[in-house]
Amino acid sequence: MQVQPEPMMPHQARRTREEEAEAAEARSYKRHTPSKHPPKEVTRPDHYERSNGVDKESATRAMLEGETDPYRAHLRANGVKYLWRMGHKDSPLRDAQKARQYIQWLVEHEQAKETTKAG
Image 1 (cartoon, rainbow, N blue to C red):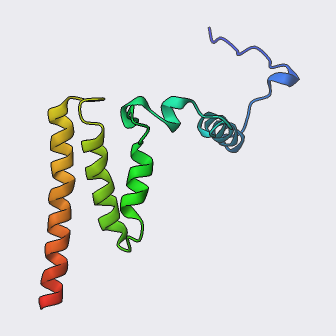
Image 2 (tube, rainbow, N blue to C red):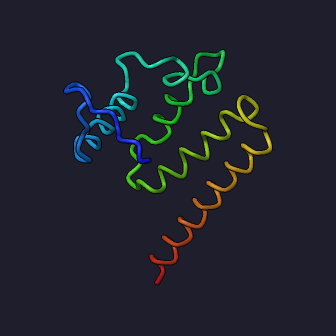
């Protein structure tokens, strides 16, 4: 004996795939839309602030002022980020390794530029 599905009420009408996709996108947008006041963990995490009042964001902005090479700026900023937070978030060794990797990429980037200039 085959079971028939119960009839649906008008308010239970099934959505089309397009309607379902739109609803899913709306839910996702709502989840990923930043609030007007993001939490401090997002705007000023403790592992980037120091007791002397200097924060990583301000120091990085000052360091990169006038930088014209976006890739070099990215590498410098990330190298500093891991050195800045060293011992305040992940293991100091892990942060040192990450900083070293960004600095190594920076060295390679600068060597490639020198080679291009010379050649």
